[in-house]
Image 1 (cartoon, rainbow, N blue to C red):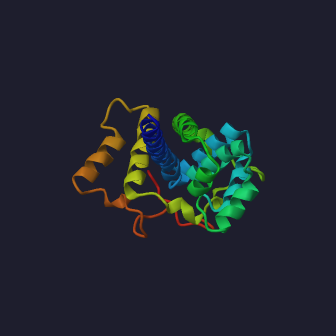
Image 2: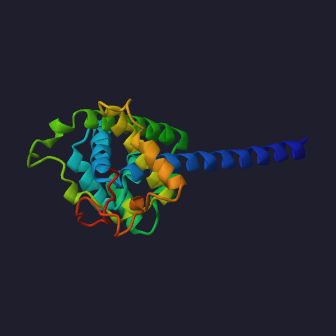
Image 3: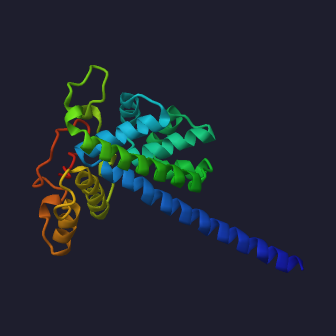
Length: 230
């Protein structure tokens, strides 16, 4: 009986380990959606705005946190979730400089990956809402910025490029979907997102490659250039 009980305990432990690993992988994928959206200038502005709203912070506060830690926006969300495990941003920055990545730090802190995944899904949903609102009221967003407003010129870190080409393409489709839906003529033509998806399937659409030939939108400081989605 003791042997059977021990065997069952080992099996339960192994299953728990694999379940946690699966939850972490799902979370990483959801966080990468946030990071990929921020490879575009407008996308980055919306991601910053949405995260600031979620955490009740000023937009430039998030920019400063990114400059202190070197984290992209997906990883920054995870860092904020670590506050629930009594890890503040300064301590996270110290551990990052010590050679650990944010996922290692989160694992050691015993973060609940399911909760983080749910949080990331909510953030992505709110990003979609804000993208749609932005495209609906694009003219209203052209007012001159105030001195303490968000400034994309300061919002860039090397880790912003840590997403795959496939993830960037998915972010492009998502971006263009909301652009199309906000267009007054969206029901009268093939959606731009559908056109770009068709181009990729046929081997066209090379303008979306993330390289020097793409024609980047805004010069960045402390960051790789950002890719325009439209």
